[in-house]
Image (cartoon, one colour):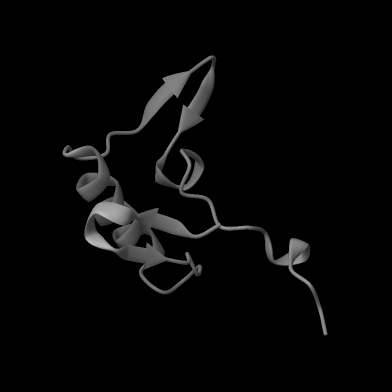
Amino acid sequence: MTICIKQYNLYYYPVPKVACTSIKTVMFELENGRKFVPFVTNGINRHIHNTGYEAPPFSSTKQK
């Protein structure tokens, strides 16, 4: 899933192992005006990779 912050005309497609966590954290801060802090909701631990900034699993991408 592409992360889009239209206010800054900024788009990012998360790619594991290429500063993904750092870039997602910056995108979160730009979009929300605050630092990301992990939290628990409905018994589920939430971190930067499962709060709307997910990348699709490689297995779901179309193979040629």
